[in-house]
Length: 117
Image (cartoon, rainbow, N blue to C red; front, side, top):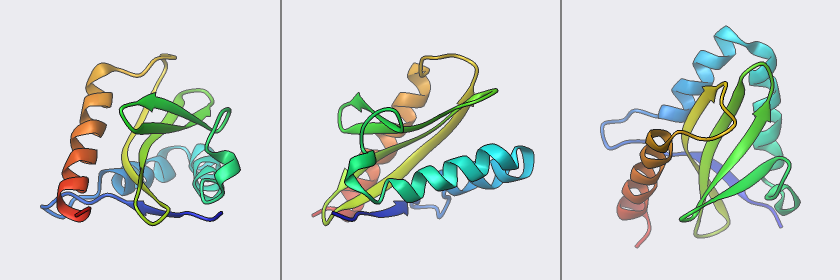
């Protein structure tokens, strides 16, 4: 079963995950390449679990890459076998900050309000 992966976009036109990936490409091309490969794997259902992906609750999941810094992209499932990317983060901590989780939830709800009817 194949899924499509897409970026969420704010009403103002900003695309936070694309901006995150552009910055990562400039600062850490190795981690960027690993994340891009991970995003390609998400198109296949068998990668929707650990170690590549992990459920966070409330419909959110994370694509994880552990390296010098932990790199994560938060996403959710949408209708018609779509995966929507909503937030990207790098940190040294093993856990996800509450503010990052909340930002992802807000973007998910906004996207669902605008596009899933």
